[in-house]
Length: 330
Image 1 (spheres, rainbow, N blue to C red):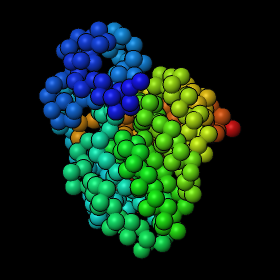
Image 2: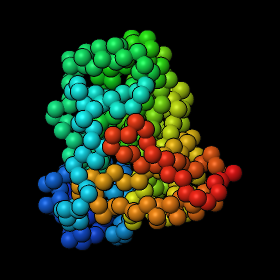
Image 3: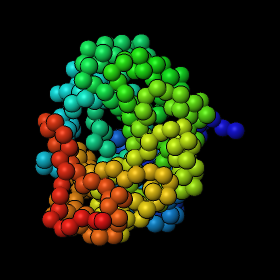
Image 4: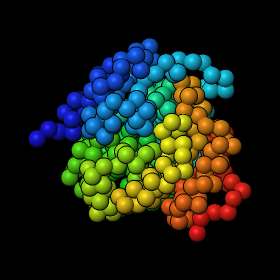
């Protein structure tokens, strides 16, 4: 039986390989775009794509294309100005009561719309020995009750590293919650090992896992099984999506996603407007159209399955919720 690391290593590392696997023309991809931001796609995720379909919603999220090379006005390398809140390597402190740790710069999958595609991870990887200044900072700020593990994808860290990190956070008495933002249960479910589940279930902290799924087609039986195991390990499962042109920019598509998430035991959380990162402008949808889509979505779903439409704005102390004028769901 292959380890999750071996399965990850068998994934696609070029647009050419991925397009060949799907029986699509090589001309759809861009090697120049890959030089700016590498291709990385687990094989299991690619197997959920439709062969021969150049508009497949999973493919569009990960395929390096020429549009990424177009310099777009108002799109920048650091759209959320995170570097202004990055006083200690590995820590971002933007919001009251919680801090974010960049556990690793690596991801199992490189999403082409990623707002951290230009983030200086080389300056923000303390390594196992370098987390003490971060823990000292959290200890000194007693208003911090939640630690968010991010990246990259924090679940690409080994179980040994995660166990050590959990132990350090658990020792800080005023921290009550650890939140993990990850694509791993969706794109590499094999990574959810017994050792990891034991770590999560045995923690004194409330464990919240936020998946990043954008389309119901991503959520096959393997994902549903892993979500059930995470719930059994006392994890609270949420999902946030990004509204992406050509991928999920239709109310019916988003409604299908919410229903499928709920079937997997995951509650919809946020529907984000795209962060204006350089290289991803072709995914963007203007606010007026996004509001119309969201208004229609509210008519298709019960209120508990409607994610909050939001955007993150640099320098603000909270996310900006967008409230269309139409009446909400019931």
